[in-house]
Amino acid sequence: MLAFLTQRLLQIIPTLILVSMLIFGLQQLLPGDPALIMAGEERDPKVLEEIRQQYRLNEPIPVQYFYWMKGVLSGNLGESMRLKSSVASLVAEKLPVTLQLAGMAIIVALGIGIPAGIISAVKKDTAWDYGANIFALWGISTPNFWLGILMIFLFSVTLGWLPASGYVRLGEDWRASLATTVMPAFVLGNAIAAVLMRHTRSAMMQAMGADYVRTARAKGLYERRVVLKHALRNAMTPVITLGALEFGTLLSGAVLTEQIFTIPGFGKLIVDAVFNRDYAVVQGVVLVTATTYIVLNLLADVAYMLVNPRLRG
Amino acid sequence: MTDATLPTVVIADATEENPWARAWRRLKRRKGAMVGLVVVTLFVLLALFAPLIVPYDPIATSWSAVRKPPSWAHWLGTDEVGRDVLSRVIWGARASLSAGLVSVGIALGIGVPLGLLAGYAGGWIDAVLSRIVDAMLAVPFLILAIALAAFLGPSLSNAMIAIGVTATPIFVRLTRGQTLAAKVEDYVEAARAVGNPHWRIALRHVLPNIVPPLLVQASLAIAGAIIAEAALSFLGLGQQPPAPSWGSMLNSAQRFIAQAPWMAFWPGFAIFFAVLSFNLLGDGLRDALDPRHK
Image 1 (tube, rainbow over the protein chains, first blue to last red):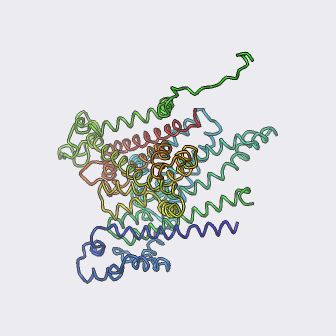
Image 2 (cartoon, rainbow over the protein chains, first blue to last red):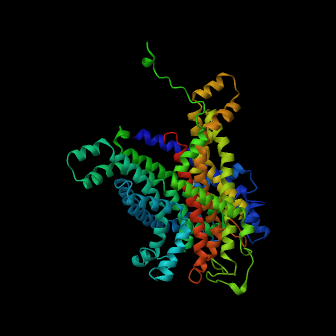
Image 3 (spheres, rainbow over the protein chains, first blue to last red):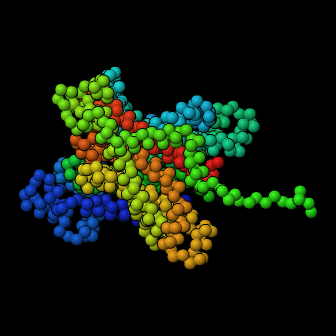
């Protein structure tokens, strides 16, 4: 287990270095003088020189990368030109909002995707199965920003049940917080529920044909117990690990969902930074996202190893 | 020994069905895939003949027809500056389909040669390319596309480049894996034994045999690219106003959802049906091109 962990940790180091190069390299795509673009409206030569000094734009690119990376490793992701605040503190401020949203979205995804997958597998080739498959196709084909707009139209404009936008922190007022996040969480969780449903269906169908399920049935156990205790427990391992890989979908979805529901999270931070040409924030947010994604993949691998006795040996 | 005891020798039928004809026959049996194919064809025809079929100029504003609900004059209603929603949805098919096709074309154009090179050459070339692919796949698709589009500048062509580059690693990985499997096959060994140069083996013997999985991935990637283009245009990083695109139409519709909900319905349905059709077609192609399926 330790050897596996060490090997996986060593494997992610070159990936992380390449990710950092890729993200740093984005800056080179800016047409013309980067200092001029970063300064925006500000054309004062003194300000431009300050930017060149700050980002070492007069130095060769490898030197610029070295200093940028040195800053990143010491927790300095750069400075927001617009908000005059460090990118690291902005990320720390916005991340909990997105994490709350992501957590709720995962609850929605698990709550819909797994039962739908089980029913679809157990009642294969019935109306239930077709219904669940239609739901999965709907989930993966619906753009979440459109679903968000439709939900605002139905639940906020027409029925007046939920606020159309805004965010209240969980610690401030939990009811208001839930009211502001339930729609975006559903929008985010919907697409992942569809993917989870498909994974659960195929894993359950495989498990239902296994010898241990036949043995359980032969012992005279109730079908419900066979499905939930024997088949489901074994089918869940690949579903949970594959589900962890959906984190990327969650973060990509959060960018659009937070924009629609005006939620001041991680996704809105990157979009606002894009429109204000706050490139240090864009780079910082993308770097944090990629690192989190890589670490989560590693954790998913470890979890898979831990729950699968055949791999542990 | 009598004739009756002779073993039956099965001689390969000289008129054995062509693999593509067999795939088409299997595809025709799948209702979902055929529905997908019909709807995709319909969207392509709409996009191609948009100038001939639209009832109004899609960018012509009319202050006397601001936010009018669906009527005989404007079947899908009008938007916040009096433009005909139906005409804009039809023209929007051009932006979405071209974004889907061009960006997947870019991804195939870069990804397939690199994947072939990595899988066929192996060694350090494979190691370096695989690490780069891992790094690109570590950044969530839309976030990388947004970052690229942001640095390249907002426009439809830059959005296509951003989506194409972001989708490339999937094709590198798929082509590499398929090449690794194909290069140990007997027909590749035979091609090598008769002295074919490596480039010829890769292009003439390996590549044609790995086309089916690439085709399936491409049709599913077009669905992903259409959603990504709509998302970038929704955020203002894709098609720029007043040119119509489904994503940018949803962006302006969001502000008028209480007064003119029809502005949001139709572009959304168009994205949904286009993406659903490519997904259905991709699923059908996967089954039709899989030799394990009868």
